[in-house]
Image (cartoon, rainbow, N blue to C red):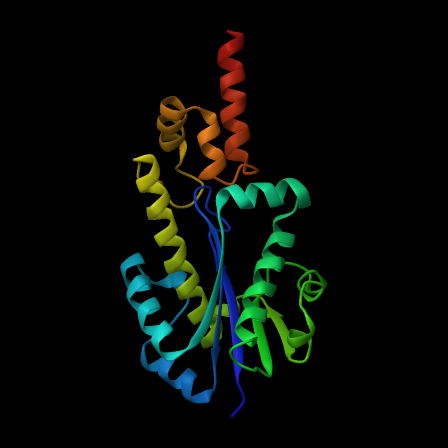
Length: 216
């Protein structure tokens, strides 16, 4: 029975928190189980439902998770100056690690860059399978399952970072100013290195605001 691997990420658009990539393997019977669980794109379900579904998906499918902490992410971004290269590396590692546990004939990835970027990162085992990169890959049930696991893991790591700094870190990148103000006033700007993706415009806005304040 042919096996398919789906891969997706979480945290890419979030200022605070880890970047997480998950890969899930399933044959036709596994896909049927995922449908029975009503697995769908993590963006379409609540955080509590994501956590519940992730626990169930892990029980019925082989999976692999790659987590990149903000500190590691910032170091990689300083080196590559490109998020897609980091994403490609993380996707390739999740896929390759899963292939150690399960052979697959097809690999489907939610497309985030030119196809060549990911293919350059894949090793020999992945190149034996048909690799498909498609926009809105979560329409495929196995990619949707990967999105659920990745999102659940992102939420768990965000909660862990929140406990470390004593402040509930917000998701996304649009409503983070209050958190930035509190954290930088309490710990200083260096705290962001371990909890945030520093290349976001949010960081530049914070620096610009401080410089403007100092000039007055």
